[in-house]
Length: 313
Image 1 (cartoon, rainbow, N blue to C red):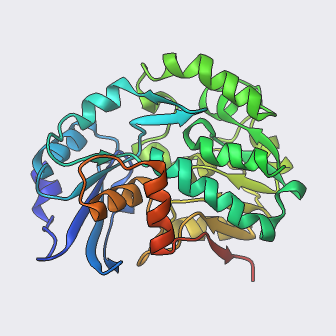
Image 2 (image 1 turned 60 degrees about the horizontal axis):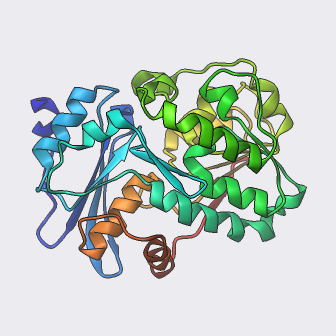
């Protein structure tokens, strides 16, 4: 634990400080100083390589020393079809933060990403697109927005999350599965169906490979999309959120034609929704999650829009 904090330094005077404690790999760590709406910020990510004990210790030792925590590599809860489902083991993890609020990005996913789909419609023409959402229950706002805009969508939650060869072909099917499965799934350790630590750097090709071949657009969590992707992604568009330069290299090597992130790059990378949600809460001066309307107001004020990168020469 001492190694994790030995190089850590507080934000300069006058800065607000957001720290994302992630169960993901430490190789993706970042620290950026930015000024947004006249307020200087330090946005920081600290990965624990899947070590829950280290994550708990970070929440405990940095509690009260930073303005807001993000939770990365895991969801505290998911909002599906208007209902919030909380993972019991993750709730225990974040309980080590007694003073500083912990945000997992679920509120921002349900607002910012839904809005991003509408903004991208003039460019992509969703009614002409075949979209594979590798995991949709954790991005229900995006899932519903794609359906509302007429995209031909396959939701891969059962295929990739539970290894059940049953692609979901409608938003009504996704709603039904969420309603039936999430009360039970939220009682299980989240790493049973979401890659943490070194598993984020490994690939598993299987029964879902044909869905990648079918799709024009692969949408959803970056780690999920990479973990189950075949080697050939020629001509595909990837729609995601958290991206590092190494991810861009990976995509170019596999032939991805276009990368779209739901938010622009901040400094050297695109930060995850948990970081940005924590940023908005810190900006507000509050110590609790904001409403969906408040998140959207801040998104408009900051001017966040999807970022489009053409990867093919």
